[in-house]
Length: 105
Image (cartoon, rainbow, N blue to C red):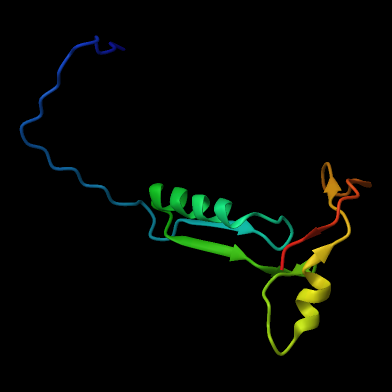
């Protein structure tokens, strides 16, 4: 394969680019119920999804491991489920924990 040389100028007087996704549903999921992320990370993630033309974003906010969505009528959900005493290290099923408390409600 030839590579363009430095200083080469390309000129394309007229072009039509058709950019259509192969599938209408192109999705991604981010699990913040189990894995806390800062808001800056979420914003960057959404920007990258848009860049790659991902059409569906599933933001996984709740699970049996934690409840991150505050509900005024049910404050115990985030009071109890919005924090954890420590995080598991290593692969699923590992008995190694970091011992660092973390909250994310």
